[in-house]
Length: 243
Ligand code: SAH
Image (cartoon, rainbow, N blue to C red):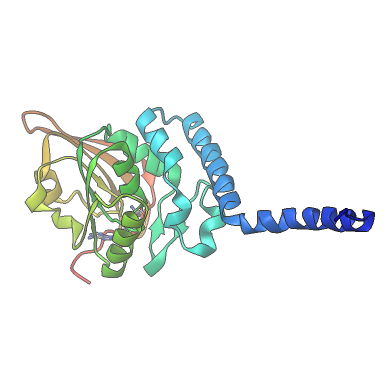
């Protein structure tokens, strides 16, 4: 049946109305595209800020940080800031995650211990690079949610354990690298002992609630340990004992 002019107009109108409706239905993918472009912008800034390791930059460009923050913080996921996560803890500033990752000279197959799983974001960055990642979180609820999140996002190979990271993970030692993402009052001797020869550890050390110094602790092939003080940082404290 031939369509009247009014009918055609109605169809056109429907189509026009339908377009935004359809794109609303597609909102999640629009969000994904927006998140992805903001993420690339963030990584560009981090590169301009001096991080040069291409594996680190590629991982930051690939891992969806917005999936690691609470829904209320998602809009800020690609601003270069630390953000609150559950249990009064924080996800570190992306540029600091990048610098600390670069400092351990990450590469495929490197066996890495992370102390302070938090959201699981740092662990995901290391896993994306191809490191074999072991991560310890003292708060049981965070360990559980990070484990689930990592699995859901395809990082199920990351081993997550609840416990006191001051003591390291002796059954899996030695580690080629150790990354501590909570502020310690001193360098924990068990972690130095669990570093491979050679091995590198990056750890914030200082007064528990204040500013810490980011230290690079290097163990050479003969087991000699050298420590360098890099720059000031602020992390939540490394607490002791089981919760
Ligand atoms: N790396 C995290 C951020 C770490 S926030 C991320 O990418 O999101 C620091 C975390 O260290 C907190 O979750 C805190 O609960 C945890 N933590 C504090 N003391 C700890 C300890 N002794 N052992 C293991 N985890 C600890």
